[in-house]
Amino acid sequence: MTDELRPLLEAWMPRQRWYSTKNLSPRITAVDLEPLAEGDGVAVARLIACDDAPHHPVVYQVPVTVHPRPAAELAEAALIGRVADGWVYDGCADPRHTAWLLERTAPEVQLRSSRVLSGEQSNTSIICDVTDGAGRPTTLITKVFRVLADGTNPDIELQEVLSRAGTTRVPRFIGALRGGWARHGTRESGDLAVTQEFIGGARDAWRVALDCIRTGDPFDAEALGRATAEVHRLLATELGTRPPDDADREAILTQWRARAATASAAVPDLSPLADRIDTVLRRGAGASWPALQRVHGDYHLGQVIHAPGRGWVLLDFEGEPLRPLAERRLPDLAPRDVAGMLRSFDYAAASAAAPASSTWAADAREAFLTGYAAEGADPRRHGELLAALELDKALYEALYEALNRPDWLWIPLAAITRLLP
Image (cartoon, rainbow, N blue to C red; front, side, top):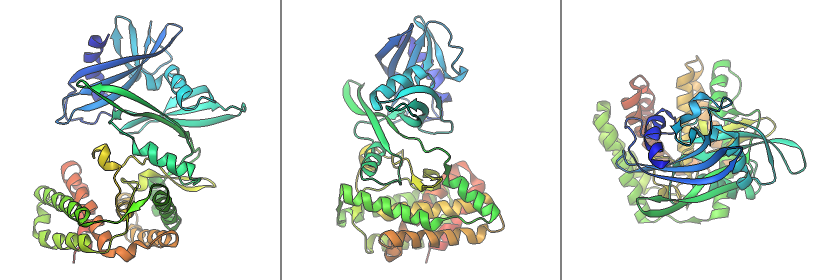
């Protein structure tokens, strides 16, 4: 069946949000199909596909179910295509696959119903209404990783560590699934899925911020700062820290300068600022640094939710998706997360386009830093480092906007100007 599936996947995958190279057409060179279960004539399997179209080949996970006839109860968009054995569907949309997955990650529960959460970019999350071991109805969320990498996924690793440490600042960890696959004859293994607590009634912080800017309601940036510092403190306690050395400083300065050069090549307005940009980056590299530790790695308002009676909860600890997994698991600078959130406040204010936008971002920044300082080391004590990290983030944004949304380029350019001496 694998030969039949290859052309079907090449036609179906580009239409999926999680397909990572949308400017290319897939070139599937290997397909591993692992049978998982069968019942009532429906087969459940895991399909691992290697796409050689990008310069660095990508391995994708596509759980599938194969039905003897069209499955009217499944969404038409879930249909991958027809093969000799039947109709092939995306398993994430099929409760049969979800039930199998829960048996491996949350064996004490029974599935009642499931639905796919829309809007995700790189993974697929399934909301699972279940009955727990005591017969009580509850809801879990299972995240299926679409892009696979050899090694431990930091999203699972860090959320499990934080959950077991007892904090309510992350969803409660339930269980995870690991597995292996072949990439051009080499065996690899990694995390395939994770199940955790589903927090009902929560709103993402980005939406909360936009609403607060437009209505004038208070946005509790100080509490968000405290929550962020709590998570950083726990990660340092549970996973350790190490002092930065000269090699760390040189490596990060090299990364910053490379980003500045790439951004300047795409944004002509940055070229006259090159010396001033490099001054900020050099000062940051030579300034006082905190100990290196594990961090979130891709922190912004979209990675936080606000839960009734619980406050801010942090999500998605995978780090920057385009960085190799091994790099995302290295100790890093906690102020990098702080800088990411400060930049996110600027974007929220610009997106809201409300009369209060001009002062909201500045107030939110100050309140966030004050809240962080109440629970951890004040990021303002490392002002030159924080400025360099924020500038590096704004340079990345300028490159992105120049290539994708030129009308938004003014947002990072304003930040870059503000951060320069």
